[in-house]
Amino acid sequence: MNKFSDFPYTNVLVLGLAKSGTAAANLLAANGTRVIVNDGNANAEDENIKELARRGVKTVVGSHPLSVLEGVELVVKNPGIKYDNPVLVHALEKSIPIVTEVELVNYLTEANIIGITGSNGKTTTTTMVTEMLRNSSLPVKVAGNIGIVASETAATMLKGENLVLELSSFQLQGTKHFRPHIAVLLNIFSAHLDYHHTLENYIAAKSRIFARQTPDDFAVYNADDAVVCEAVRQSKAEKIPFSVKRRLENGVWADRDAIYFYDEKVVDRAEIVLVGEHNLENILAAVAAAKLSGASNQGIRKVLGSFNGVKHRLQYVTTVQGRRFYNDSKATNILATSKALTAFDTPTILLAGGLDRGNGFEEMLPFLKHVKAMVLFGETAHKIHDTAVKAGIEDIVFADDITDAVPKAYALSVPKDIILLSPACASWDQYKTFEQRGDMFIQAVHTLE
Image (tube, rainbow, N blue to C red; front, side, top):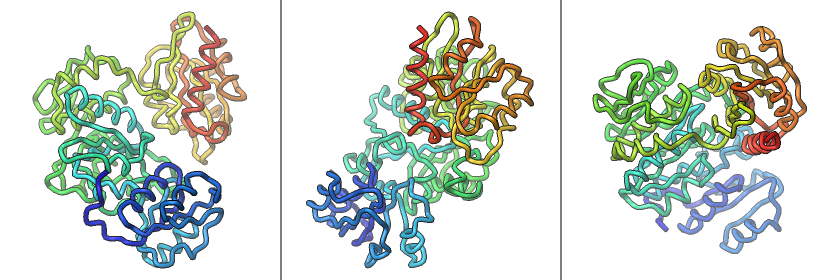
């Protein structure tokens, strides 16, 4: 287990536990830092609280008293905790830095850090990069927003190894000195405004991935996204653009036949099994990060010739009586659903709806030309219905939930139709996670067989 290098703090508050907070508290304690843990939802009988207490970590649970900040030099917060939490408000008033556990990564390892963020496509790209390096016989681990604690993984890694991190805006907003050697920004679309409040704040959080880079680093960015192009300007790193629209002499690009890294052909597009124009963007970004990390064309081709998507991300489920079912439950915003719709040019029945975050759905209109019917559920069902009517879709059905939506979609379909779950909304009005929503869809589809 690696020790901290040049870590400047001796008294740290960990606010919120879950996996990342527990890992951070354990790492800090193992490195001799005086740690206090505060979790408003935990209680003294929780096993992880007891274990932390046995290790000498002070724990305050059940509430958020401001006294937990006494003597504290740094707050490591759970990414999901909003900045209007009273402890965080008071910390800001006292000029105490607030970070997420991702900030600890560079203090724990000299591994080659590849950070990947964007409004959509993070997990798909992260998975492809990891597999491209693995299939090139390069040492690699994956962590971050993908469900594995970044700092905990970093503590086990050596110089010369590769750490691929999926990074959310919540994690990145809480970084001060975090520095990926390769930073990838896929796209930026209005999202998580309930957390960030404004689009400008959200963009600023995503842009943190470039903030500490140096001329020795690389910034991989989507040259087809104007917001991304503006964001990358702050990076001091060598800039590596990717584009699905034009040839780039200094980046990664595609024509009808192949994908190229600068002027080198990497893979024929006929070899690639992953569908969707948006996934072509993810592939280009993955190729850039992999090549910059030393991956071989053979390793890249092997991955692209077999990788057909990440679960819940435009995932092919099965075919029932000629109808192909796709699970895109991870599509929690309009951009993700719009991109999923562009992956198909055949009649599609769209299942959509979920948490109402206050936005409308008119931006989906240009992407509904192949949608022959819609099955709607959740808090936003009636909002999406209004957009569907504007699009001229005649078959619009309401459902109680995913389990109810699947047979209703099947009843509206004929052989060769696509039945696509791509909700354009978060799941939290009816389901704990988008994974649970997707699993319920898969289960409901298999009952039709």
